[in-house]
Each structure stands twice: as C-alpha cells, then as structure tokens.
Image 1 (cartoon, rainbow, N blue to C red):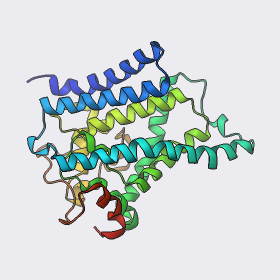
Image 2 (cartoon, one colour):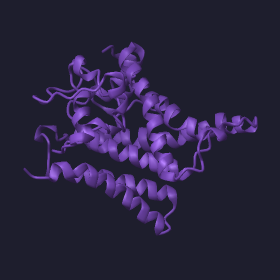
Image 3 (cartoon, one colour):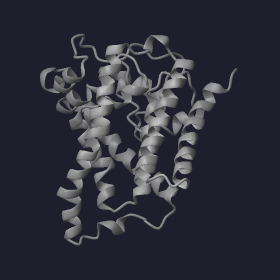
Image 4 (cartoon, one colour):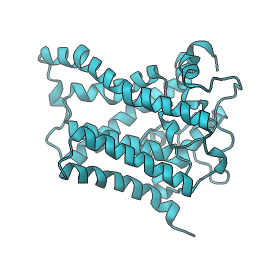
Length: 285
C-alpha cells in the first residue's frame, strides 16, 4: 500500500505554513504573503487532482469551471475587502470610539500559533451552528443550496457561496476578532489555514486522513456532507475542524461504502454564476 494518499494532507498543510513563514522572513508584506500562500496552495491542490484523482468523473467541464471562477473572483476575493471596510467603519471604529473594553477579551500576549489555534476553534464553533441553521431553516437553506448545487467536488468549488451567506460567515469569522483587536498576523494565518484546508476538503484527490478524520474537516468526511441524500448530507458541518461534529453527534463517515450522487434533487437548478446569485429568490429546493 502506497503512503502517498496518507501524506498529502500533512505535506500540503505543512508546506503552506512553511511557505508563509519563508515569505515573511524574506520581508514580503503580510497581505502579499497571505494571498501568495493561498494561491500556491490552490495550485498545488489543483495539480494533485490531475495527478491523483479520486474520481475522474468529477473533473469539471469548462462551463462549471467558469462559474466557480466567478465565485472565487467576486465572492471570495472582491467581496471580503468590501465587507471588511463596512465592518471597520460602521461597527469596529464606533465601538472603539465608545471606549468599550473589547480588546481585553483576547489573549494578545499568547504565542501567535496558540492564538491561531484558539481562533480556529472559536470560529468553527460559531460556524458549526450557522451551518446547521443553514440546513435546518428554509430561508437560510435557499442561500446555502447554492453551495450544494455542485454535482462533483473539486478544489475550486470551495468558493461557491452566495454573497449573503458569505456575509453571514464573515460576521462570525472576522467581525468578532476585529472588535477584539486580534493581530493581523493571527488573522492572516487563520485565513491561510481555513483556505488551504478548504481546497483540500473539496478536492478531487485520492487522499486518506486516517485518525485526522476525527480532528479536521477532511475531504473524506466532507464528501458525505455534499451527498444528494439529506440523511447523509445533514452531518459533518465543521469547516476547518470536525471536533464540534463529534461533540454534538453529527460526525458521519461510513466505512464500508463510498459516497454516491452529490448535489440537489432539483434538476432545473441554475448552473451559471448569475443564475446561482438569483437562485435563492427564485427556487424552492
């Protein structure tokens, strides 16, 4: 048995952190180091999909790739800075102007990596419950169905989120930490962790996690979250971690079979970028 599938996750994640550290030691600005690391991580995962596919049928067609490229350009790259500007000027600055002791809540003196681990743990707890709500309540599910509209998983469709859902996510993974004055280095390392894990989590790579399936949000568990069958999909809500799924009884990974069809039951659900932006207001799934 080859060890390659077992080594992919630790090597890619470890490589991302090492590359980020190398850039910072070389004097590359923090924002550039963050984006370069995420881009290199994405390209690495894309190359591994070509070399070691989990399912060749999951390779995207040109139209699907263009749709997901639109989501990563607009929702993941252009939208967050706009929301960050709104958060800073409409909420963070006014709260700080009131002199409220929001910054004392966070352990600023702890080592950076410990702060990053704490942030991952806190964000995943909040996003776990948001994710469950997105599956449970009809109005929220209409937004989240955009993400579940994919019929096959590959690295780029980790970006397929409706902008309104992305705003809800940012209210949990950005706003509280901006209010607490968390250091920019901690925020950057969180985004590197979340993004690189997300590319792997949605990847079409023949990889194995072993005991890490009980720690991180893995490709092996997340494939079941995208199952077309609700009883299978309504599990594994964790983003970067799967610890909260274990704690709250939603961890799911059958040992004797592979996941079947993915996506939604509605055959006429939109496929284009603009169609998916309109879908929550036009389709009841």
